[in-house]
Length: 199
Image (cartoon, rainbow, N blue to C red):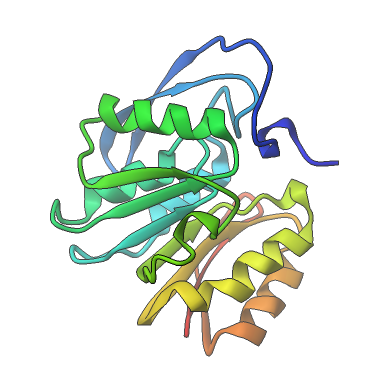
């Protein structure tokens, strides 16, 4: 059964809390609320992906299923101010919180967009050097596989999909190998695996 954070328009009471956390050696603050992913703390999978994600200064990055914006905000702080991060999520509350968190962390080279998976970038002919995601496994493997299958359509010729997975990681690894030419495991901890896949 899909989790509440997978809904488009959460209806629970908006009781916000602030999470302070060091990521990649820097202190960040994130406002969170009920019915968004990992509402009380930054989950271990997200932390591992952030620790291991491979970015260069000039990368244009897509944070797919961004939740409150943690991965994308850290990515934006790593790349050049002249590069850009786009953050997308199906959850309207999550996107509103992401917009607040961009301001809270003084991030100016990023933009949050509401929509399901790649919908917010379809039709814009946008491509990215890196797509990062902690995919919504609770929504089912069909959704996870869709993320993988459609990623090459939105990547540059040298681009990569970088994701973290725990439950069902063997099936995900197999799917990645079916879609991409090269799949590298760039991180592993507490049952989580981070894969970097190249076209």
